[in-house]
Image (tube, rainbow, N blue to C red):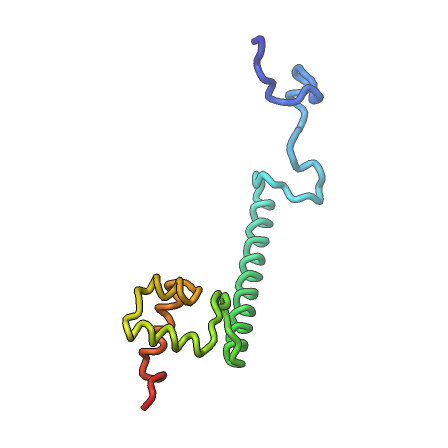
Length: 133
């Protein structure tokens, strides 16, 4: 068979003796067989998988506890807001919308912010807790 790709490297040799040689990946007795061919290696990987899963659950619990503690201390969790506008500017955005001075896009361009930020400030201004009694 000319041009056929050999099934093993030439360093393994050719002939019957090469076919009888053991070329398993588990040559070293202390190495874990990565092929999963034996029952022992299967059990070892099962145990390692269980330990890894336990460790992952412990990490998740620690992260959640840390976030819970941070929230209890009043820390902000998550991405910070992109646009920071002064309180006077926030009120000016809301007033301009109430007075009908432009569209949401126009107000966003005028105050140098995004449409979503304009909508958020309008919603904040309209909420009952921010209104003056």
